[in-house]
Length: 424
Image 1 (cartoon, rainbow, N blue to C red):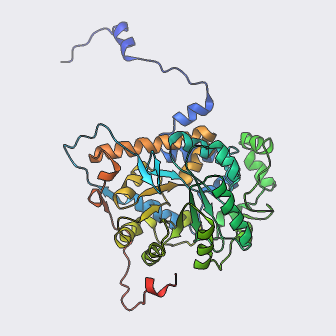
Image 2 (cartoon, rainbow, N blue to C red; image 1 turned 90 degrees about the vertical axis):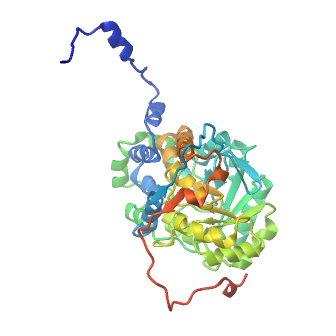
Image 3 (cartoon, rainbow, N blue to C red; image 1 turned 135 degrees about the vertical axis):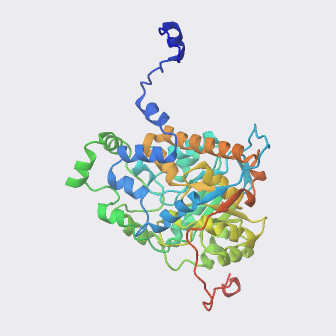
C-alpha cells in the first residue's frame, strides 16, 4: 500500500520555481527557438509571403533542395565509447586565417528585403562569433558598409561575372581595397533558375503593392514599418532595381562565362580565390590543377538547376580525388550542427550557411542571427562530445555512414567527360 500524507507547503515550494517573465518580445521568441526549424517558423510568421518564399524556395520543383536536406538526415553516426571529450575545440584554419567555428555565413542577395538590418546584422554577428562573412554581388549593403561593421573580422566577397565585365572588375578591385581576404568566383549561375514561387508571388525588386500583398502584410505591420522607414534598398552592382528577380539576374549574368574570365579575375584579385558552384569530380580536379585556392561544392541552394548533384553526396568522391591538401568547402541544405560535423568528417574543410542565417535574420534581426550561430554552435559541440572527439581534426569518415536512398543506375556505355578534355 502507498503511504499518503497531507502535502507539506514548504516541500511544495521547494519543487515549484516560477520563471521570471521575459518582457522583451524579441528575446522571448528567440529564446523559444531551439532549432533552425524553429527559427524558420518564426520567420514565416513575421515576414510577408513574397519575401519569405524568396528565401525559403528553390528552383522549379525544389527537388535539389529537398534532396540536399534529406541527404543530411540520411546519415548514421558511429560514436567512440570511453573517449571523454569534456573540452571541445571547434576552431579551424581556413584559407589562410582562423575561424572559431567550422562554418561561415554564405553570400545571399537582396538581404535587406528579408529584414531591414540585412548584411549588417550578418557581418556583425559573424564578427562577434569569430567566423567569416561573405557579401554577395547582389547584396543590399555596400562592400565598404560591411567592412565598417566588421573592420577586424574576416570578410569574403562573392563575385558574379556580368555581361558588363567592367562592373565585375570594379567590384573585385573595391573588395580588395577594403581588405576582403577571399573571393568566391561563382560559376553555377550563367542564367537565372526558374524560381516558381517568386513568379507565382509576382515578386519583384522593389516589392510591388497589390491587393494580395496588402492583405498579406496586414498581420505583419512591423515588416512594412521597417521597410518604409529605413534607407532605400541599394545594390552593389546594379544600376536599376526594377523588374522581377529573374529579370534582374538575367540582365546581370552572362552565359558565356569561361576559364578566360577566371584568368582575368585572378590577375586582378590579390587574395585567396575559391570557385563556388562545383558539381563534378572532374571539374574539381581541373580547378585544383589550375591552381585556385579551393572550391565550394554547391548547387546554389537548389536555386539554379533543379535535380543537380547533391553536394554532400559528392563530397567523399571529391575529397578522395583532389587529395588532402586542397581546400574543399560545402553548402546547400545545412540546417543543423550535426550536418556540419558530418561534412567535416567526410572531408569538408569548411561549410557555409545561407537559409539558416536568413531564417534567424527574419526572426529577429541581428539578435536572430546571433541565435542561429548559438544554436549551430551548441549542436556542433554536443555532436562532437557524443562522438567522443575533442577537435575537428579527430573527425574522420569512419564516424559517418551515408545511408542510401537515391542509388544511381548503371552508366555503362555512357561517355564521361574527363578532366583532360576540359581546357584550362
